[in-house]
Image (tube, rainbow, N blue to C red; front, side, top):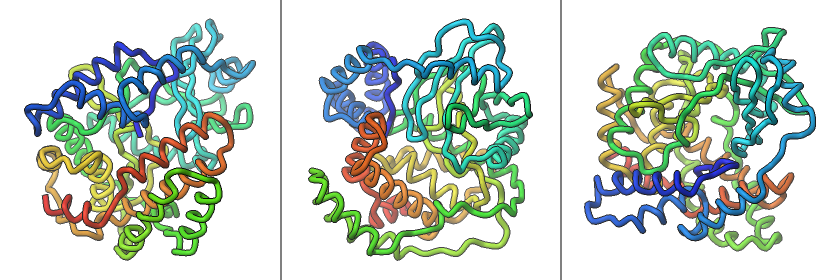
Amino acid sequence: MKLLPDRPSIEYLRKEAKDLLAVLRESKPDASLAEAQRALAAEYGVRDWPALKTEVERRVADTPTAPQGLAEELADVFGLGTVTAPAKPVMFTDMGRCWELTTDRGRWLAVTVYNWITNEQAELGARLRDAASAAGVAAAVAARSSQGRLVERVHGENWRVHEWLEVGPSLALPVSAAVARRAGALAGTLHALATPSDAPVHGYLTYRRPEADWQELLGRARAAGKPWAERLDAWLPAVRELRAIEFELPDELVLCHQNLIPTHVRQGRDGQLIVMEWDFAGPLTAELELGYMLTHWLLRPELNRQGVVAFRDGYGEVREWPKLELASFAVAITGWLNWTYNAICEAINPEDADRALFAEREAVGVLDRPMTRGGLEQLLAV
């Protein structure tokens, strides 16, 4: 699901809708602006354009304020200088809220991260980011604390900070052929680094819950009176088909981004793709990461055939396109299943109001456009 900022602009959303219209007309020349507006609203997790406008008005009227002393403590811990303006909310993500900080040394983006993203994990990502930057990949510059750490505990949460970049929002789907080509070239550049890694693969990408867990989740959704519970029930046979697609990790793995999805990429000047998130980095194969990227970039809201060809061509500009098979989507499958399971759990029993809204929309989104074996087979055929 695409995320609205905490201070959205309806004028910018109108521009996004017009940009999306141009993309839709690549495959459907008679697409209308109304169709593009509905498609954009769906990307943001609401039913239609009027609902999106209402959501913008709600957010403008209810802008969050930073906890007392948060900006000052972050600036002190990360050595950012003296705070010169109140912290401004940027957006709420699945990891928490991000804040814009302004100090006498510049502007910064402070981001909460999952508890499992330790400083050691962030250093792994920084290693890949530095190598990628040297190879021409655009990325945000991270700030280190006075202790030389990338992640610090502040106000009971893990935080990292990087220099502020003037970029657009995350990419709306479907992406244009031009953007897909750039994304393919980006993946090829990262894979060409071929940095060996003997770090363990995170269990989120390898562990699949048994059938009993999904049945128990369905029971909880029904007990909570969730209107989408029966959609979950209807999708469970597809879960079984996905879980049947098995794989084995080879002994030799390379350091990969592991979560190079549209949500973590922004467009800069002249359409340049800027990677904003590196903390999920870890060992995989190029084939498994390509399977992961293809499902996120080009399988939603439906199969983007022109985009698949463009992505492959962009990758081929940098290195040879590898042979993919159904097992190449195994990590994508595991990640999707775990994301779906966790989103539904959070929607049933959210920690707070922000997470309740985020998780409810995410649960609806994944059930409205679920991953299926048939969809993967169509993608592979292209």
